[in-house]
Image (cartoon, rainbow, N blue to C red; front, side):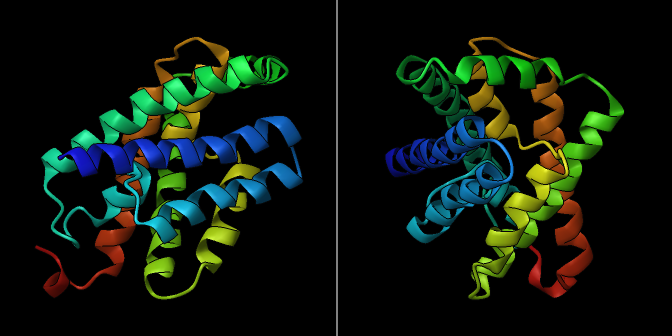
Length: 191
């Protein structure tokens, strides 16, 4: 359990570094550099909720482990955001602006669903031996305005606030990842 927690906290920090670049540099370079975070997560074998949830049945991941990964990602992600806020106050205005654009709506959920679909595909391609899913998928979801729950909680930490839209981001990422998994993985490979 200790290793699960540490690998989950480390994953949030790496996604946080990518999100830091996004907030600091903006488009077009920020979304491209953000991919560094997920590359690190995959290469180091860390636990990121959005990279694991689509493999819940495929990899026979215990639901209690996935739940713990999510909780640690959220808590350490928010803490990372607070750290970035203290280290670089110039990020705060952009984070507040971003959080101010989020709402609790079906459209927000659907943007999170689409991000979940991309995340599943990005990690699946990595598991098949190519980082191209990450290198193209991460900028794709950012340029399209799709919502990634762990990146969002980091932004909330930078803004030192909370938004209920985070619940929609978690649910949408989970549903989008599982939907692509169910549509693409043969039943014989599922638990």
